[in-house]
Length: 594
Image 1 (spheres, rainbow, N blue to C red):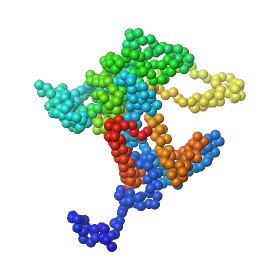
Image 2 (tube, one colour; image 1 turned 90 degrees about the vertical axis):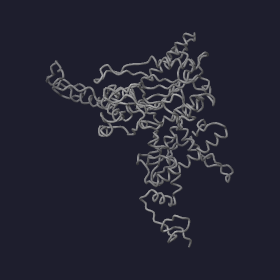
Image 3 (tube, rainbow, N blue to C red; image 1 turned 60 degrees about the horizontal axis):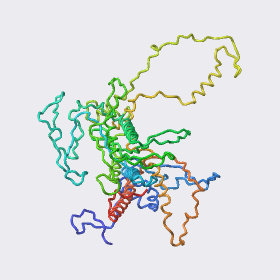
Image 4 (spheres, rainbow, N blue to C red; image 1 turned 30 degrees about the vertical axis):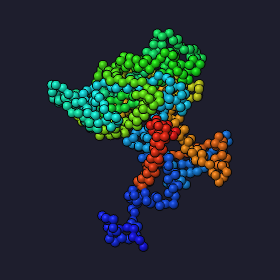
């Protein structure tokens, strides 16, 4: 028998000592051992096909129960299948987490959907008319104000070809002629030329001088600031249309009334990004549309005369004018000022492959940030509670710990209930007993002023209704979003008319995968397929599923499933690159599968 395995390791190409053909034992408690045990099962390929939908997920969700095929109209159950007869006795579905640090596979799917959603609003497609490519559009970036000096990397003139791998020589961080110190005795100067991956970037020069309270409050109200900025830009454009003599458009509302609206409107989309210092700033896309009086929901071009320069002027005017103070807080009775920072970048967007900022570049740039969160600050915790806040918040700790502490401290309950002994008493005398009487509604004999039976019935009806809870204060959400350093908004939002929704893209993907195998023709059956004999409109698939768990059963299952998914992703990536090379475009500009 030919020797296939050595008892001792080899350091040369010659055979080792004691060569033999025995198979070494594989232990199930190791990843390789459990993967080997799964791969040797006769149903391995069936299991691999069963978990294909969630193969690349880090922590898939397992569902158990029944799947019923019901005939529409009659409700008759045609087929019933239980998950007990399926591999592992469960159905695997992807977690759908958008954060790349939690699940890279689901985050990649989310990023591609975000790319398609954002790009469709610029060039059309997926239900958006292609005429939007001729609408004026800009790419503004709004930043937060300064809450204190931080370490930064500033490059005044780039000579690199790729900004992602920029190796240009940076300017000194905080250069000053006089080496001064702050009021806490720390130096207020930094002569270092920081590299791109320096861990000190975004950290304050003096933690005690930095206004952590103002920053977390700004993060909390940044969504309201963006909303007011968008409204101010729309008012600027409406005034511009009135000065140019463009009349307002009459629109019929759902109630049948006629109202006049401005002839132009904004269709925006934005992505929020947390900087290294923990302050959020917005990258936005703003498209200028017209208004159709006959169909207000239609996407039509703006009136003649409006250009990209008008959009740029509108956002510059709005960013400079919009500012407001937050409500009063016990720590700061006058509130905090919420306004944009001095850094404002607004660039026109061109469609196609020519131009400094194209639709593909903008969509790819924003989709990249849609899968990131607080990783830039070094903080990756989930939602914090009273039991876990002590592990992350520290008023005397590093920068992120102080931000979390500020969220928890400012978001505390600021109103205390009045003690019962100090509450004002009702001056009216309490009703006593009256003469015996009979309730005309239920016939109960009582000496109380009100019938106790009817009163109990009315109280039971009131208890069944949802109680109107008092609205919490404006700062109560800081504790809920302390793990996000105060920012509680979604990281990708858009106007209703800008583009399609994530749900539509997911439904299209589900329908495509469900009928993917139907596109293959069986040559041995003369082109007749079994699916052609099915009428999908007469049946309905109903799943009576319950939550069974999270994650793979073994590390070997995760290893096999993730490896298969990685190989599939590599094949798709190679295919897109080959198509991009064939058509002479970039791979990011090509549409991916729905």
